[in-house]
Amino acid sequence: MKSIIKAIEYYLPEKVLRNEDIAQKFPDLKIDDLTRLTGVYERHVADKDQTAGDLAIQAAEKLFTKNKLNRKKIDFLILCTSLGDYITPATSNILQDKLALPNHCGTFDFNQGCTGYTYGLSLAKGLIESGQAANVLLITSETISKKIHPKDKSNMAIFGDGAAATWITVSNKKEGIGQFVFGTDGSRYETIHIKDGGARFPYPGTISKDYQDDFGNVRNDGCFYMNGSEVFTFSLNTAPVMIGEILQKHSLTKDDIKLFVLHQANRIILESIFKKLKIRKDQEFYCLEKWGNTVQSTIPIALKEAQDQGLITSGDKVIAAGFGVGMSWSGTLLQF
Image (cartoon, rainbow, N blue to C red; front, top):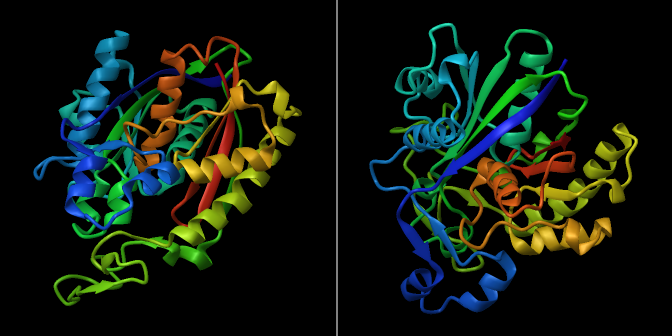
């Protein structure tokens, strides 16, 4: 028994924030240099009253409708988000009702950031291949723009909001979701984090104040923080080793892989990883220009785009790998 991806769809909020808009807000920002490094020209941002749960519903409904899939066959719903609609209950509980999924459907949320999609695939694979489910709906959704300080020009230029829905199903074919590689270095958790608002530094006892970093970005402990140089070093040291381990687990070489679909952190990180891997140009894939870094949704969005462009077809082998928040990394082989 194997598990396989049956279909992927994604949804982006209607509001678009373009680089010209950011440059107008920050006249001193070298937007051309930033665009070259990030690879991002525009990104979508959620409206004030639009939540990660709302985006998740849109992505799932699109999945059902465009692929003519019967939602009543879903046995389990997994949602990856760090910004659920409520502290409790889990947003996936609410989505079960909003999406009219059957009552026998199990649900849970998990918070894993940049590795959320590959972790989610591993959870879906476990449910299916252990016989507990035949069809799993994996949704990744984030409205990270709500946690970026309005004066934080660097993170504003990189990140975008979005959601993706993936239907994973049981299969008797040899192809499917392969073995996984995981890793964690929790000692570096402060590299990417939102300090205030959790149980350690709760509101309203915590009063978050603005301050300026060495690069002129306004920060606030109640907002999203990322140490860009640390993330670059971490990604470059971690991703190539992880990909080598995935290939080794499946007794494959780099030439056996049709496409390497990595977490779309930013352009310069991806270029540096691909260069270190010494893979062919036709095996590289970038999906940043119109979306930005949508956190846990970057990989499914990229996979869908690659399929739509005819770059992934039946029988192709694809490496999917994420790295980031935590600091964590995970990846697998996908055979379509």
